[in-house]
Image (cartoon, rainbow, N blue to C red; front, side, top):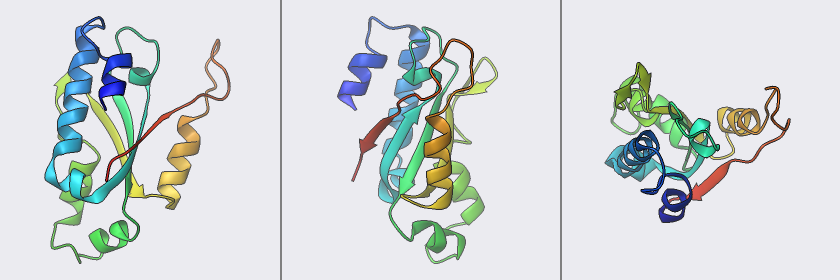
Length: 139
């Protein structure tokens, strides 16, 4: 994550970039997120050259079988609340936007693969039709 910070949210970058990075780092350190997540895909305005992004898009790649265990009640957690927490639904808001816009699924799961593919495409004028994403291995 130090490299992500150096490239996208150092002291030379905007305050909002630094706030988004701080919120993302805090989110990824939360016990629920840390214990279940193996890989995170980082995208959105934060991963672009936008000086003032509104948020960061995260795809949390969970350990295989985690989503079934979570939804099946095998982890001893309220699945709705846990999924909302994983996906950043309780993250800090600035300017009416949650700083984390997240999606969670097992690495290689259907939602994970759909979001991975979606985040690599763009139909915006002036952008390439394919774009990169940052993948960070966590555990």
